[in-house]
Each structure stands twice: as structure tokens, then as C-alpha cells.
Length: 574
Image (tube, rainbow, N blue to C red; front, side):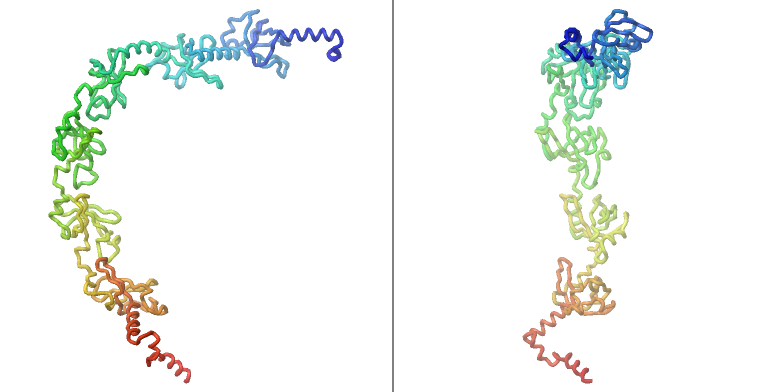
């Protein structure tokens, strides 16, 4: 060890010089690919010589078999390996031939991807979503998605298996070391030049003869032109008549003439139209007038109405709301059939939006107007309960198809309206009075209680300040429930209206059945409102006394003003 410490020694200086010269020639670094020379081959291992390493690296023969090199190697041959460890815990050198091959192969893939160059590979197996492709030069494995195998669907790809062919690199993940390739791009690149020449032949306005229907989609139809070019006709360009799918009017294999309406040389697409070969039926719309009756043909029925034609190609909309005056929630599906001819009025023509609206119910008399003439307001008619909900009845009036509205508050003068409503069911026959007719809104309101004598008429000859006699029906904490003599209605006297003196304003003073005089404090006949009060009578008596004796204090001079005090003194004297 002393020789390394004393560098002044000539022998040490010479050793240092030799050591530095040797290390400068050989650059050994972990994680890099180095060349190893095969020194010895056994049944299980291959021994290498790498200049600059203190021991011989060893390769497992199975590793070389996996990468296809076991049959090619021989003594004296150089082989690239990845130097993983210069010295492991056992003092041995760790190298890998397979990892070196993968890294070199990856570098080649990156270079091809950056230069946008195709690579040679072969499909080795199928996997979920596609296939596995082996790079012929390096043996690297890549993924081929099913959509990238060909430019058209293939049911069988057995003829492509293990055949060397070109692939385009479409995606590289440098972090994960994954590569994705495409055979479709290679095929399309050859066709693209030919397709560009074909597309360049067509101009807007050209007529294509005998194009063959090749396939359908939700947005249009594909036609094959002379077997060399596929063109698209959008759904809206197939017919002036409204259709939902191309199969409604076309069949696969059918031949049609087309008009070229667009040419996109960048996307290599040609757009065509069938309907533009014919005159636009909407140009004849001036032959039709608003609010005039025409016969239309039902072409198509939908959830919200029916599409009808005034003439071939000139389609109009008949909404469900325009089918009937009286039937609610009716649909065209229940009332109409395709091919049926019906009379309708044109209610709207919008040339800008190319829209025509029609009405079938306008061809019939408005039953609400007829009803108003036959049964004006205040008429009493007979009806049948046809429906009910939580707050009303729907009553069909006699010989009409009209359902009138009867609110629970118009059922009775006496009980709670909702309680009274529970007594009725579908099919019940009742007499009602027409209360309101709104023909424009198609509404009729009727009432049942209005056909009966109004108990409120008891107050017709009464006025504010009048005194009436009532019978106490019941009492509670809120006040008294009373019924005037000769009247069938009950009224409430609030606790605050029982007495002028708050100490006497106790509902418990009555048990029920007593008769008592009350004053009419307020009466509003139009609102059917009456306020009854006992206190009000006492206030009237007090006001009369004040008026008679001049002031509130003057009453003290009356003989009975001190009666309570005199009685109290008399009791004390005894």
C-alpha cells in the first residue's frame, strides 16, 4: 500500500502513468451497451471477454435462445450486451443480451417514428383489441389495433399472419416503452394518390349516373360510383319529404342518379344530392293560401303529430293539439293512419324556415262556441262525472263531448269542499249550472251548489247594525259557532267579539243550545261575508248612553250608578 502513498518514488510514478493510460482507452459505465467477445460456450452458459472488466461476464444460454441468437453464436464472435452491474454483491459482472437488443430496437423505432418512415414487421399473434406485431430487424414487439389492420372490415386475417409487411408507427410511449403501429395507413397512403385523382375529376353541378346504394348510416347514404369511389348523400339531401332513415326510401344495390353539390380535395370527399335533381315543391307554396281548406295525405306519424303532404314533396306538420277541439291528450298515432287523406286548414306559412302548419280541428265546428250558444252562462244542465282529481270533478255535459270543470268549492254551501268531493265517483249523474265559458281557451266552469237555494239569501234584507237572534251550536277556545234562526248556515263569533268587558269574553259561558242576540258588524253580499258580534251590541248600547247623557262621566249622577257600592255597604252593616 505504501507504493500508492509515496508518489515521489519512480516506481509509483511509472505505475500511475500505466494505470491512467489504460483507463483512458476503455470507458466502462453501467447502463450502457458494450461489445463482449465470446471466449467459451457451454451447455448452460456463454462466457465473454470485455476489456477493462476484472472478471468475465456470463450469459445464460436460455436468454440467447429467447432472442434467437443461440444458433448463431460462435467463439470469437462479438455480441452486444447491456452492462447492468460492474460488480454485484457476489463480486460478479451482470450483463444482458436481451435488454441490449430491446434498447437497440427501441432506438431504431424512435428514429423511424421521428423520420415518419415505415418499418418491416410481421403479425405473430392475436390479442384483445388487435394483434401483436414483431419488428423484423430488432425483434421488438408492437401493438396493432383491430381498427388499423385494414381500410375495410376483415372477418379473417389468417392470410396476414407471419407475413413480412410494412407498418406505420402511429404512437410511441417512451416512458412505458410501448409502440403502436398501423397497416391501414400504409394501404391508405397508396390509395390516397389514386383517390385524389378520382376526386379531382368531379365539379359541383356534375351529374353522376347510376350510382349504386352501398350502405346506410343514421346521417345519410353511401353510393359507389363505378366501383372506384364512394360518395355520401346526406339524409336531408335524399328527398324533399321528411324521412328518418335512408332505408325508408332506398334499398341496398339500388341505382340512382346523383348531383354533385360539394367537393373537398383536402378530405378527398364528394357530397351529392338526389333531391336537387328535381324541382323544389316548396316553390309552389304560393299556390296555397292561409285559412283555406285543403285535402292532405298522411305521410308519417310521430309522437307529437303527423307529417302530411299537400302535394308530392311538399310536407306540412299537423300537431296533436290541432287534431280535435274536445279530446284532450289525443295523439296522431291513435287517430290517423299513414296514407289516410283528411281535410285541413293551413294556419301558417313560413317561407324563411320552409315550414307549413295545418289544422284538422278547424274543419269542424268549434264545440265550445256551439255550447255557448246552446247553454249560455247561468243555464242548468245535466252531466256525468267522467273524471276527478284531488280538488275537482270533470263533468261531461249531456249530448256534447265537452268535459267541464267543477271545483270542490262549488259543490256545497255547507261542508268542507274536499270532504264533499269524496262523496262523488265516476259515472254519477248530477245537475250543474254553467258559471263561465272561455271558447278561446276551450274551458267551461260549472257549479253544483249554484243549482240549490242559497242559504246566504237569509241576509238579503239585513244590513249592517241589524240585530238577529242566533242559537249557540258549539263552543271552543276560539269562540262560538252559532246558527241564525231561519238560516241553515253556521257562523263563527270570535272570542274577541263575545263581550265588551274582556273578563266576560269567555266561550265557556255557553254550553250549547242557548239563544242570544247578536249584531251584524259587517255584511258583504257580493263576497258572501258576514261578521256577527255580541260585543258590537254592547258598543251600540254604550254609544247610545253617551249620546243621551252627554259624556261618559255624566252617568255617575244616575240613581243606579252607585248601586253596587250601596249594596256592598249594606252587607257590611249587617
